[in-house]
Length: 65
Image (cartoon, rainbow, N blue to C red):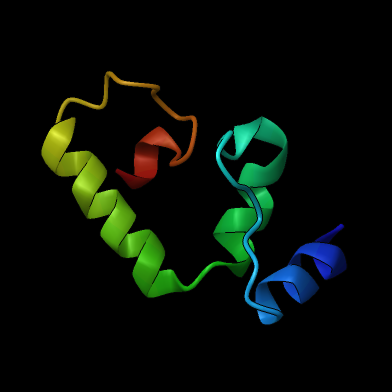
């Protein structure tokens, strides 16, 4: 599965579209996506949800927020 997602991203695609990642695709997303993009997403999440109460642990494990 990792190879398929990696190829899709290499060709300009994304792991997920309009329906979000879900639990199954999150590990692939965190492994394959640009670390700078993930860091930005974490900062945005923290700014809107500093207490981590909105969807806790779904995209980012609680200990990494």
